[in-house]
Length: 471
Image (tube, rainbow, N blue to C red):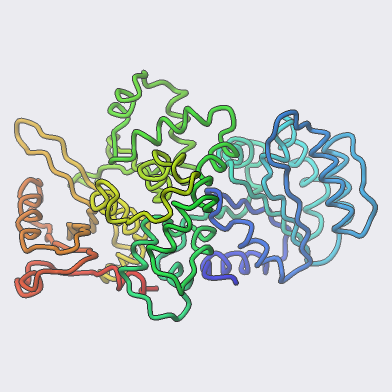
């Protein structure tokens, strides 16, 4: 069953209504639902799907061409067609799609093109001379290796003015992820536990059995032999990063326990900051695994200071709890695990909850009743200690022209009243103009001490339950 993605579907439908051929790029991390979205949209026209073969040893360009020829035959009720090169293959496809409303979907294009360095140029040439002559044709390019699409399509001079729509799929918003529990009366805290492991990744949410408890679902997915999330990490990293898989794993490992500046990350890895490493970090950002959180100052100037944050909840949970026990899991020893016994679980769930909130900023802004047009910045904030100011870290700082929203993101079984003192101290360390209002906000999951509401310190208090319902 297809859930959510209403915003993206609306964009695709509006795009289709133009009276001109269009090229669309859809990217995002593996399992985020790119193919499912395009296939669902494709039901509304004649739809032809082609996908590249996954990387393997000795895979050649001929293998990819033969596979494409087989798919072409299946799509058009023809015998498999043998091609010598991609010009022949793409021109043949263009010749079969010259009239009428048609959607062509080239899925995992980086795999399809991986053994031909000139593939992108050939695609551009056939688009210009053949495909775009059908005013009702949509060509959708998709792939999990977002860096290939970035380098060869979006940042390539040859494609300037040709890509008319870019969809970068993120995790599903919490209110859409909530649909996977259907209409069952499951508590928000139970949903919270699962989302702390899966994030809003549709493929993982599909594995939920709503009639099972959160603990049963997590044990099945993460701590049982053959569990879908036991082997997933190696699959996605191998498929996306291939020979550089271990290099990227080392980077991710350093971000498990919290955000780091570029210099801190390089120091921990024992390397120098080079252009190559910067490109690797950009690849992790583009791929949807890592976020680059910038700092903004009171003068509304964008600074160069930023931190890398591991934004993918599954990656953190895997590296922290599944990978160290994988051999025991494979032996079936961990199937009776009591989740509360996992070391440092509350701290990790705190980081996971922070990700869930930061990955749902539009919902937060909506619940705070802030007009979108007035937002200047919205990101975590960190301030280094100097002779004139103390160090300070704010989970989320939203800046508008006249207001700073200081948001504390808190997960605790019981949230004590001293959270007010914590935020008061943070506010006192900031240099804030007298013309700016400060509104403290608490975004939480857990049980609030009664006095927190009674104190009227917070301008807004937002529960996780509200985030699940807000649309």
